[in-house]
Length: 260
Length: 340
Image 1 (tube, chains in turn cyan, green):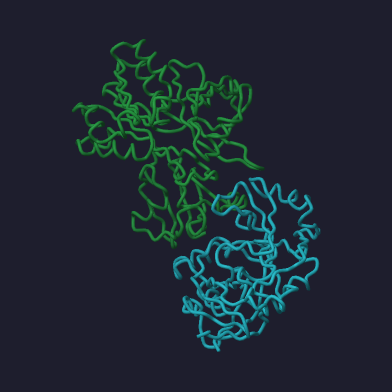
Image 2: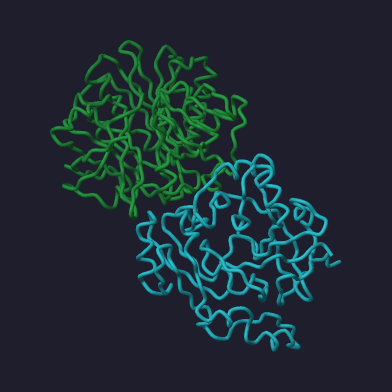
């Protein structure tokens, strides 16, 4: 056993504060309910059209919540789909409104994300025109799953002499390695890792980092020195991306092991 | 940088893709907008809830034009150029900072030889008008365009030639007829007359070609003057500076890095980052595309123009952050703190 899942996180609205879950279904496209909403901005570059905390740091203080959270943790047809003789293995929420979201803004107000007042409230935060996007799959930057170890958090804290918050790295899976040290996850690139009883992910590549990791998830204050350090000392990478090879549920505390 | 309102007093369609705008400052601001031919204006263009800055060269000359005039050619996906070509109309007001730039005539004795490509004619025609109206110089122009329809100021150049017979030589190079300009065509135009001042403005490959030819002919740098129009490579519409005049006249800037202060020589048209790297300084950077933010530094003094600033928030800008990989200096007192 390599280690265990210390915590599982999903981010209902891309770039907003995430939520910890004890159990979640992992689809080929990512964790269920992860980044199912996003806001685009005409001021953003075409290659990355999203309004994020990079442009509005306190966006990480916006807390997105599913209105019917229990129904967003695993598809209601999971058993049927995963047992299907045609090997469909793509369970999907059958309720199109399953992911209804409300957002608590930093001032404490709560607004339905589909309410025009939500985007209206962001209007002064962006130099572009904003638009809301929703999909039941995942609006991820790159690969569907990100993995980060507590050991890497500790190493970076020690190297920089600062108290780094693990959520600065916005991973889905925070892992506690048994024997691996900081950046041990880098050694898993190219390998398939089994998580729990069913899910398998292939660690595809290291995660190239940007300004986002400088934003503290609880204060929205930034520390550019962290990104400079990661760039200089770790070639700009921290954490890894993974592709989902086998779908299924995972639970907090699940063991990670090499699949082969 | 302070901005002032300019009233658009006239709009002229120069080609299907280029428009000229005559501009008039408020009476009290007129002295601020006195300019030398070849200089440019920095405009503040509204965008969403904020604004972006764009620089456009003046195509007018004080000796013969009563008003300021800029000419803007529409660039695919270029926010500023499309805004100028689509939005403002006579009577509207735009905001601009006072003229700047060092792409100006240096000698009243050395004959000017000017190379312009496409919209690079904008500051060049300003120099030509000054040379004809204020001096006895006889400017020679090599003007490259993709097609005859794209030639900006054709009638104005013809009129200048007629008004100053024997003083203006204008050679039109049209790619559609002759293929891209090459070293041979540039060399033939120069024709061995090297005791001149050479001015170059246009697309990067055209300028590189002309610079190479001049260098190969042994023309010294001090007689070659370049207005480097820096375009966003991928045409992204988020570029803060669609055209960043590179020849700002800045010779060096100061950088604090790892606790040490450095005086970094500035090379015209280069970013602060590239200048630091060329000096062996270990400046931190990664994407060089304004996306990652690795090269965010604090500007402690001076003015810079940013080609793009995608990753910077309003708060970052208010706190003085700039991106080394996108910044070019606009004043001689630029000081950046890479440790902040």
